[in-house]
Image 1 (cartoon, rainbow, N blue to C red):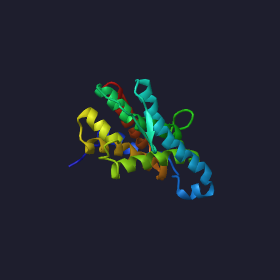
Image 2: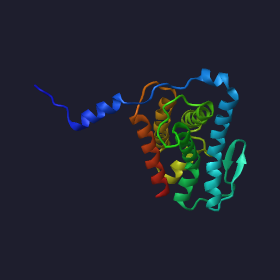
Image 3: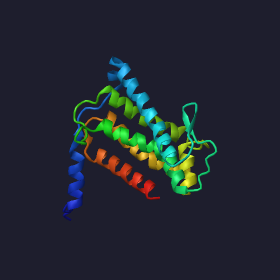
Image 4: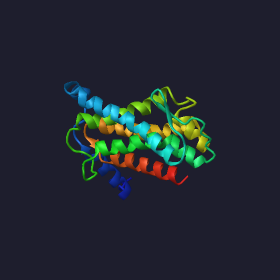
Amino acid sequence: MHHHLSTAELLFISLFSISAHCEGWSFNEARSDPGQFSLGFVGGIVAHELGHYAVATSKGYKASHDGLSIVYPGANFTSLADHLQVSSAGFQAQWLMTELALRDNNFREREGALGNISAGIVMAHLSITAAYLVYLKDHQQGDIVGMTDATGLSNNQIALALAIPGALDAWRLFGNDVPKWVPGLSLMGKGIGMAWIWAY
């Protein structure tokens, strides 16, 4: 029995064979210039918190900090859309920062080796995502619980939605011969997520 490849199958195979970039980043590069990597890493964490702060204050909520976290003392989120937008703002900020770090000035995926500042920004995104998946998923003041309260989805569903772009971005950072569909799928997932959040 002969099996002819459909157009979709040919496209899928061709996408798998095209790589976005050849050489992944490694921690050995951070050892040679730890200051640059640390600057990017701290910048990525600050961007996450500033995302919360900017969206909360723009909507008229008082934002304060409790340790490293942004909290909203006395906030009564009567609007579910506000609650979702404020609680997801940190992840939205780190998604934007990661895309800027991993892409060039023409917004194409970087082909050369990634610099340590950019790698630090992406590592902050991966670390925050991992912390929410492993330790903070059920934390009452955490982003996932906030998104769950606003949407009615489960903590696990929200965590999965955050894990997918995180896993793809880890592949983009560390992988060798990363297929072109990987950054495309990551960007599409983030774009759909942000469009849904702001149309909620």
